[in-house]
Image 1 (tube, rainbow, N blue to C red):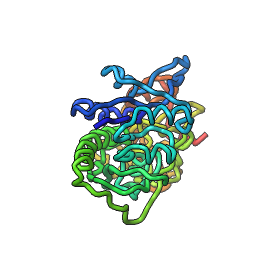
Image 2: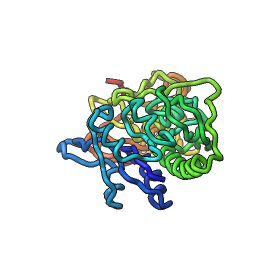
Image 3: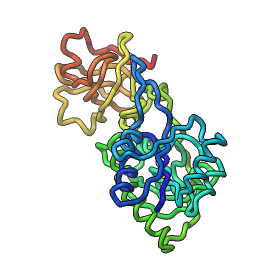
Image 4: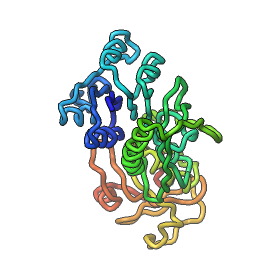
Length: 319
């Protein structure tokens, strides 16, 4: 099939790579313009562009996908199908209805659950036990198009948004190949989405602020759902600290050498030793296992405690 591929982040790379390896004709890759990153504000291409460059594929980077000149350029390419995987802009009707086989999207949820920009994060944040990927034919709504295929997977206790996203991206790439084959052969008929719809709005950096008044179980999901971005964080003695891994005390009791108080003020350090940091929450306590002070590398609690004047009774704050 003659494919124009729309995608930008790491999540889209497996789908592009599978299409190339399967022998599909990728006539162009459309991705976001190069952006500035980091403290040095260096311009850096996105992961999909780097993958496309490996195969010498034509790359298009419009500022606005609705621009008439870009739409005309797409018409000239005359793709038989457009594949969209985490592109980052809403496609106009002129593009949605342009290809013979329409625009086909890989979405990281079991639609109609978690329509929107951050389905992986919200599935973990809400404590879900299962999620999956959906292949759909795009329409003018927000992830409302008819479904071609879906595949389910468990969300493990050790999963973060990062690890789950990686697994779903590989699943989605394989499912995409099956969907394209079925569409081309006429053996797959799109079916309307059914069930209760939910939404997964885009996360902002400030959404990572830890609210210690939540329960230990909720904070366990929160930290995993915010890892690696936007990152769960709090402040201790004026120092911004990113919290990367925690466990509710009930799950980590075998690692605790001292008895902690049954009830404490939310955000207060209840137990501190050379390799333990136990913090009270709104309900229960959590053991902090990995963290990252501002401007420092990721470290274990043991490394964090060494050389710092910390004591029990100190309190984490959200600002």
